[in-house]
Image 1 (tube, rainbow, N blue to C red):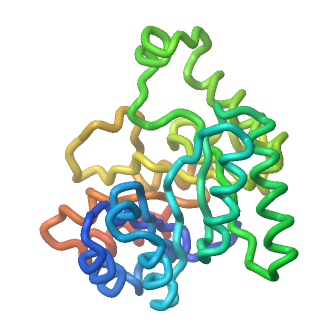
Image 2 (image 1 turned 90 degrees about the horizontal axis):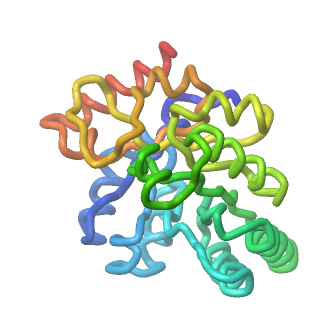
Length: 241
């Protein structure tokens, strides 16, 4: 996928105040192509935050990770498509029927109502989950890489546009699902940032080289003493990958 560095970068608006979120969009819009609205911001701001970001000429990744019975997820996905988002995500562990009905409902609605169809991404395994948690708490005996590969194959089978996954599994997914399948990687940490609650992390350069199409970043930029300088360094790292 031939994209500029700014198009590859997704900035997570991990704040609760809509005013603060829009200020971040305004400050960073020249460096970032897509802004991620997660659960906290969406609950405090509602759908209006999507409209406000779109008015700035920027795209929105709605990160609510739908996971419910097929009918409920399909209706939520239609509602999401109608508010003008660029991409959203659902949990692959909801099953193939849930994913397929979600996709079909969105395609049908967008064709009927002449809407831009958002990209639908499947969540594999959260980057906060380690191999020990997967085995000992969730009871999945396969290795983490094998499980992520299996889930990604289900997302491809269901007709999703791609997956959300740790960059550590990007290469195995690219090999399994092909070049047209989008890989969005959270847990991106430049070498100068301290670790946090995410277990499976990578630097921007490593992630791009492993096959990631988009990098999701938040704290490592927003909590930096000079966020614009951090963005410039990250952009340079993406370009040299």
